[in-house]
Image 1 (cartoon, each protein chain N blue to C red):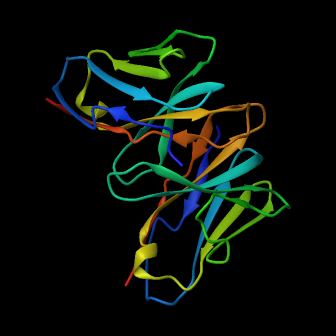
Image 2: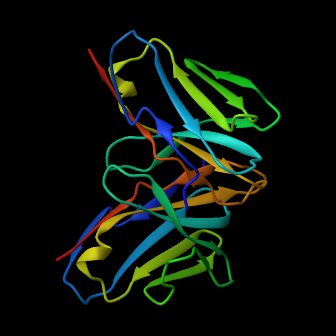
Length: 112
Length: 115
């Protein structure tokens, strides 16, 4: 099963610009996570935000969470060509050791 | 730390044959492992959850007799696609959870092509 939608499905920007991706989900969550996937590869964890948090930062990443709207956004500032990848949000209803349910993903292309 | 190794990375097989995919946590004991399937330009669909020494829990619509999962140890889970058909062609990704952590660690995936 999938949690919901991410938009945009695809995003093309120039190096140095900011990229914002949005994610919506359907059920109650314990936490929401963002992952990155390079083409044909596995996923790499970027950042986790808990249901009682509203915003979190990690380097050039900023994540927000609005549980009332069941939505989250990922902002990548000062993007680089190396940020080109697909980005997925994933939610967990329970604590550690439970499966993640992934959104549909946003494909980001950063051109130099 | 927390490296998950998945092999093979790519496999091509004839229709009707079986294919085994291995997923190993190299530097930690994985309390639970998960198998996902991903079609081109689409999201990851959870197939099953496996815990060491017990039967896997399959998601609705996933045939347990076709996708055999064995979790023999705390560091190894295998997915066997039995009697593979072209519609089984897909990208299969395993992931593992480490005790008390909510994030998952992913293997690099296996691209299965059934001719």
